[in-house]
Image (cartoon, rainbow, N blue to C red):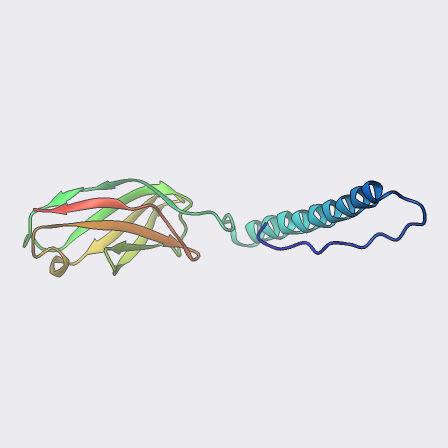
Length: 142
């Protein structure tokens, strides 16, 4: 879970070192399980309040178009993926794009200004949702 669980000292009168170690591990596991249960409850509460999954990394499955001729002007890039929401932002290389959620959690429309497609190159398209960045898909400018 990313958090350290502190070891618990177990005070018992007549356990062997192996039994003492087993008791300490059991106490650690109980603490770890309680922490995980609390995390699952927080996630469910977040989902109830917002209607969105918490902490899921966005994934791009496809982009369209995948290529455009340099100098052809503004266009709308369609991004299909998973774990998207109304706060998901598309990036064309390092440039943040104006982004609209089209279909609940699966499709975005992103406005790409013509100033970003002026010379031949390959640009990586990514999205960011709640601080998590997706995989990249290449976009070719010819």
